[in-house]
Length: 169
Image 1 (spheres, one colour):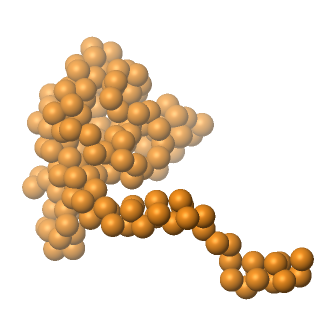
Image 2 (cartoon, helix red, strand yellow):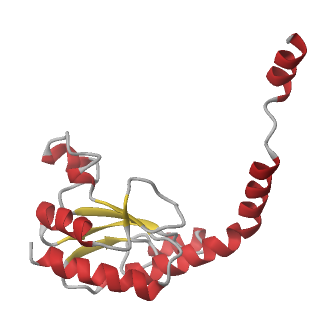
């Protein structure tokens, strides 16, 4: 028992062959996945930037962003796929938007292969006052998304129909 315990303490646990294979496969395909994440993120941000139901988009890859020049300088692979935007309808529009998406998953995670969406004011930050939420960057109008690897046409179609429903909230 001491030999096992000391070896485990000093050397760490060993991965199973399946876990090792999955990690290697994930590392080998990471550049391809990141390219798709960034490409989809850029397309979704551009779509949101001109949509009439959207008040603002916080994505440094957009030319309208105050951080655009820094993003071009430091983010040579692109500005990523996790960002926030604001809905003109505020709190109720945020809830309605998240309830209306069909392809996007309603989760607080980020960086998944699936596209994720959350309305922080009604979920992760709901215990805070409106002033505290606004100070934390989770105001009533804020929606956070993590754009995944799905086909961009499907993502935009789903987002478009959900924005239309949110605008009617």
